[in-house]
Image 1 (cartoon, rainbow, N blue to C red):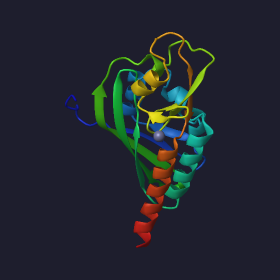
Image 2: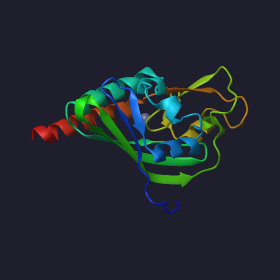
Image 3: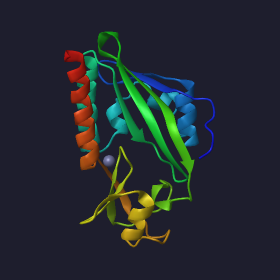
Image 4: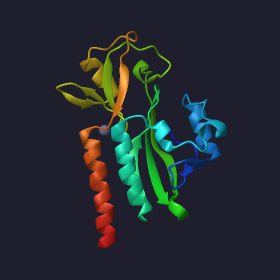
Length: 193
Ligand SMILES: [Zn+2]
């Protein structure tokens, strides 16, 4: 593992209608570094965050978390934010703002280079086949076997070639769903206690 550069905080805010109202410079810089050069002040601000979260399960989890944050609690979750050439874990803090807004702050807690994984490269062509990837832990589902780190899943799925790549369907795996719900309940329990 390489030593981390000085910690950057990627930050954005939404209003009470879930519209993005501001992003900081580090957020835009991180987007540019990760295949998101189309994400600019003009294309991001005033759009609902839901236009960036396509799958229903991930939306549902964020809706649960946001309603908890808007009741006055800061919620912190750990998730993966991988690229084709890096494994990364980030910590995301969601903090209530006045008038129903929420601030999202994330920073990289762990980063490790890896051999390029074509399956995670959004610029690559795809076949009509579909495999499921968890949007929180970035594990890939192998039907009948479970969820695995992408490299192991590719071997188990027999997808060792960089051609004929399946499409990725973003979902939330059972373990992540359970852990996040449990974590939110624990936060509430502490506040009650
Ligand atoms: Zn997961």
